[in-house]
Amino acid sequence: MNDRQGCIRASADRGMAAATFEEMTICSLVLSAMLVGACAIDSVEITEVRGPGVYVLAAGDIVRLDNVELAVPEHGEGVRIALDSEDGWQQITLTHDELGVHVEREAFGETQATTTTHAVIADPCADNAYNTYHHKWQDTYGWYASKTNYDLAVDFGIVETLMKHAASNITDAHNDCGRADRVSATHSYRGRTTSTPTISTLDGAIRCSRDHKSVVGFKSLQGYKAATCWYWNASGVLVEADIAFDRGTKWVMSGSIPDDCTDAVHFESVATHEFGHAFGLLHPGTSHPSLTMQPGAACDKSKRTLGLGDMLGLESLY
Ligand SMILES: [Zn+2]
Image 1 (cartoon, rainbow, N blue to C red):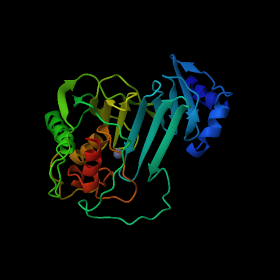
Image 2: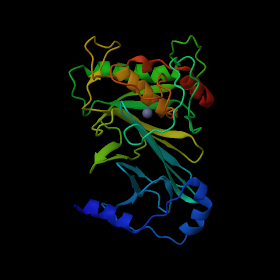
Image 3: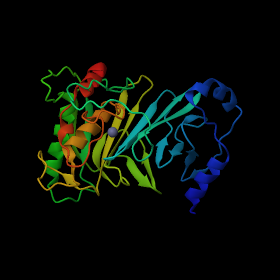
Image 4: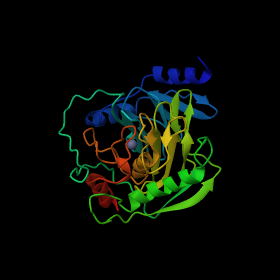
């Protein structure tokens, strides 16, 4: 065990106030009497929590839940991470209000069994499901591309173009349903940067941290294909969104899928999904396989065009 792991475990052993939101009122009474163990490594305090709930923590502390670490935002602000793979996803959210720091988690696939059966709608133009938390960009979403960690044979200029296409797929409501673009959201590509997405892998955990610059690039993501971290201020306005693609994944960097594709992942499709997160869309649930906002399978290029629910979600925000 290294010092950092010892630190995490010591914090966890001190006992956390965990509560469902139904228990929140009771919890808030209890919380004032509970102290969370302080444990600093490199001036960062890490607290491992056992599950969703409300915790007493300070802005800047790091919360670890399973394999994800998020920095506690300032009062009124929030942060969310979406982690996507071919067969599962999870979303973890931190919000900070007068009751404390709320930790929420939703997962589907390899991390959580699904017991509820829903009717599956196969036609993307007929599935109207979407999920948002009303967080949105007030102005244009300005983002940079990072070539750091990119080591595939395909020229990065092509990747950069696919990234721009993906962002425009969201803002232009690109679809095969014949639906007009009713989405007012805009994005602005600011060029390449030497910065990287502030989505890091450290001691087996994926951590989001803010640097006030929205960067799209490549990182090692421990089995996930892509991740997006996005942040909002006390007014619910999005202020940063970073997107990381897994550098170890076999990506298809073209519009079409090769005939012999078995396990490669269509970059523009995944990128469109991730930019959907960056504009405030969440996963719609577990039974919407044709919608862009439900992660797709290998060799699937269909997610680069939006389904009805994807567009309704964007229209509800923009
Ligand atoms: Zn996702």
